[in-house]
Image 1: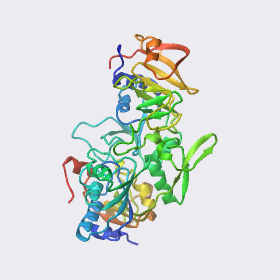
Image 2 (image 1 turned 90 degrees about the vertical axis):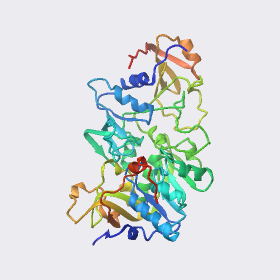
Image 3 (image 1 turned 45 degrees about the vertical axis):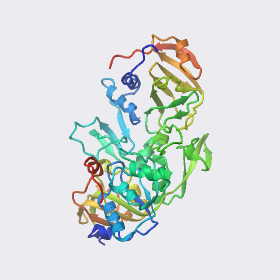
Image 4 (image 1 turned 90 degrees about the horizontal axis):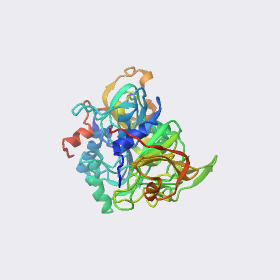
Length: 240
Length: 223
């Protein structure tokens, strides 16, 4: 078995129009910038993929990463908890113009829906959002005297994440708080692609240190010295 | 209005109630200030939603590592004994009853413990983040806030008029004038600034302040 892929272009080649795509990252940490930008480059060259549903905690910042996907018109819908950032103009303008759909999900519910999707749990009950506008229309049930809201699992056709080490079996480690959504998104994507800062042979990661077991990962592509979203934004970067 | 506590002083007062070894989540913005005022000899372990336990203060400018941030997307540092974890585990810590206290900001708090702190209405782009999760599961959910809004309207009210973050979730409110508990769906005055009378305080409060035992003096140093 060897899950290594040679190029970013190959890594994102199979994502079709209308796909749902989970993208790792929280704010400026953990976003797989090179994978996202390879997807944008493919769109600019071929007109595809478009009409994507993107699942991320946020809705992009500045003019790189998810913000650049939205700016180029690739994204029909965002599923996120906090579509604000230091520079949220790209999403904000499209949203207020009615050009992009938003499904707003409380952050912990978003995480648990993704985890449930990866774990084969179609629905669960959570206290979060009970009695609020975000629970409207959702089933409610009482357990031991408290009320809970039923939420559905969330799965995706593709997951794109950034990891630190990856071996050819797909086992992954992460770097500090860049871990955030990546381990659960890896579970919930029908096809999960990880860009890794260093690709190693099997045995190159201590099994005690593996955070995402390779069974959840379909492909890895090595991107040494990856771009960091916060640093790109502080430098005023645009993609393309 | 007579003297009122600064935000720093409200944060200082809230910090006095955090026990040594407590696991604590501080909401983004004003509540983050509470960490600065831990009493000597006590060390709380701070949780941030994006997946870090036991973080420390901000690094000096220029030393930031932007893979090491808090839920407010600000750079942080690690203390010995820190831990990283993914988002589902992070919110298991929140909802699962593992945090000792969450300290949050508020637009409005109602006498039944309802909290409104995520939305001021339907205009613009809605954004909730972890607000609705944080109000569930912590053993204590405390609010720090000015006693009234910028234009003088009560923030402690009979019923919230702004969109709710959670129902019946707040247990204590630290304001610029008083410390108020929420017990059995009513406000109970615990401490107030010595310079303000109970009647004056009641006039600035949108629901009945009940007296249940002695009311202490809210005395806070200049910080």
